[in-house]
Amino acid sequence: MINVEKIREDFPIYQKQPNMTYLDSAASSLKVKPVIEQINHYYTTLGVNVHRGAYDLAYETTVLFEEARANVAHFIHAESEEIVFTRGATSALNMIANAYRDVLKPGDEIITSELEHHSSILPWMMIAKKTGAKLIYIPLTETGRITVDGFKSVLSDKTKIVAITHVSNVLGYLTPIETIVSLAHEKKALVVLDGAQSVPHLKIDVKALDVDYLAFSGHKMFGPSGVGVLYGKKHLLDQLEPFEYGGEMVDQVTKTDATWKEAPMRLEAGTPVISGAIGLSAAIGYIERIGLEVIHEHTKALHKYTLEKLKNVEGITIYNPTAENPVIAFNVEGVHPHDIATMLDQYQVSVRAGHHCAQLVSQFLGVSSTLRASFHVYNTYQDCDRFVESVIAAKSFFLSF
Image (cartoon, rainbow, N blue to C red):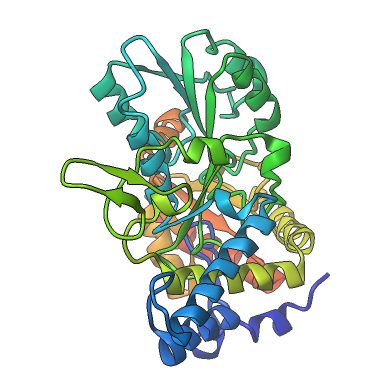
């Protein structure tokens, strides 16, 4: 087990908010000191652009930036040339979908699921409308899981793209992605994986998974907001039509035409997210020092402990008691989720209420919205106790009228 009090010393927010119970890490994690220090280092001692300057500051900055790319690549077992820095997972997923606007045609099929975050499904929904391709949904189990059998039932020779979540941001269910990728590739379909919830908690090996594309965000893994990662197999990235055009991504320009550099440069037009990439690299270094397995074991223990306590509270509906990721989606009978979340804030307990940018999940569950509590390495058993106690207090308050 880890020493959480020692861990909290690495997160400056606890100096300002020592009594905070933060249970919204699935939305955005707290920021760790090495990340803040590295970003400050860039802005206070460097502050210049990458790749272009023939002077020392530009060289130092470029080294830091490309080291960040190499560190991200190593973290998910990719090659540096397969890592594209974006402004977030949303940007990365839109970049891929946009590139296939001129590839897909009427009659082609895009497989997705009702578990998707909006950033995973909406780009493909819009592309389907523009191209005449068809969006196909994997049938879920009664509890809301994606299964191999469910995927097989919709896979066909018409399948061109599989755009799917690795871990649901609402229900925390893990998709059996290895088998799905294998089956998709038998049909020559490409797999686009939303890893925003899995990369911060699970060891990811893109070569073993054999996914064609993977997107994730920095801000969910102690890193800065405004930076994300698109992983793609090199030969695929080199074929992608750029999402943006401008400086640095171009190879040759004439009055009538232009050619693009190889990946990743062709997909990083203009000034890239320099400080974000450097900050994300520091976040990855911090995660690796603690160990993903240690983080996962700690959060799963908290998750299990809280589930057992919450199950004993009358009038609580838990929608995902078997989730692999440390997320609890629940509602209090007779009370709107936003009312509960607002009351919990009075106890300095922070949870998420709403549809979590995944309205199809709420529709599947038959509710307008849910409460969501999510755990990370800086949470304690005292956080869990305070959370459950505050839920009981909020429930009693609203049902007393």
